[in-house]
Length: 428
Image (cartoon, rainbow, N blue to C red; front, side):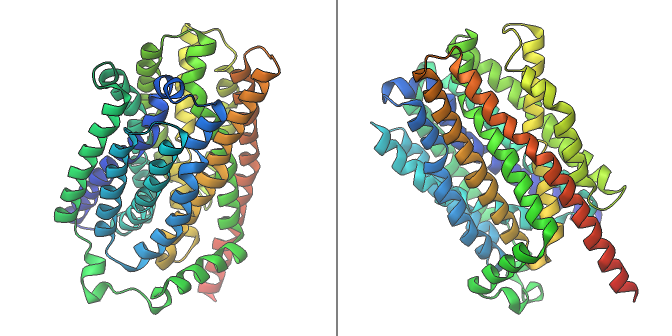
């Protein structure tokens, strides 16, 4: 790979990471403004959990399967630009909501636009980076998660006092529309613009794409176990939607103070986690097949006591902030290893579809139901008169994440066997 090609790859990665920052900033701005939105729109914890989970994620993940098929066959930057323009316009429309239903409609349709970004981005990056650097590239791309989420909290803390939560949504939407125009005009897709880069006949139809990825799911044990481990891990992450409310209601922080501090912790810790997950996964992979998934299983198990301690130690202490920081690192460990692993476990012409299926499992089956579960548990504990109901609900949902450890280890073992068998066949 030439220096020019490597430079173009890193430039593309920087551009896509910025778009992913906008993606997550939009998605989590609802949570960042939760202390203002929940009382103004008279939302219950369960309704808020639906808005931040199932309402958005059902559309996002289901449309994502079609977007993954499109990305395997058509011009990916134009697909990204169209999705970005759509979700940004609807972000601005979110600022006009008056109740649960009028908030739910734009949040639902935003999922159509956001579904176009990651399958196309991962497919583009897999072509620009060698296999030994793909987890790192995915980890850097997923720095958009903490930068977007942390930035949304900081943005809410700065903009909220002057523009209010409604003005904040409108402003972010306008930024996204401008970015969509730049992507449409400037980003190229050589593999889709020249006949030399034409795709195999096997993916010339959406039905063929779905059949191919369905066959992988049925017959590829490593792929199925990686999806299962990622789903369980993200179910546990769903508990995080109550973090800001938890800081304010049960840990005694003022709303603006919590927005800024929580945003800063996740911004820094999340970036560390994304880099460590990507670089650590690539390092482990060099020491044997399935290394990325083994690294992920070990990291989750090793940090579990500090993640639990975050909910139990005294607030307004150095230890509380340290445990919050470690928890933010753990949140981001998944994406580099998992994204690169699933792309290695399937044929190259199904990479975008594999990523789309991973997003469906993690965001819908995992994250969205985790959001709804923690919201329902918080309401139940509150109604039952339990002390610290949010703490109990979050701990219960987060504990499920430990199931991902054996699933990732088994996936690594299956990947080892598959690669060993492929090597024997090649040598025969």
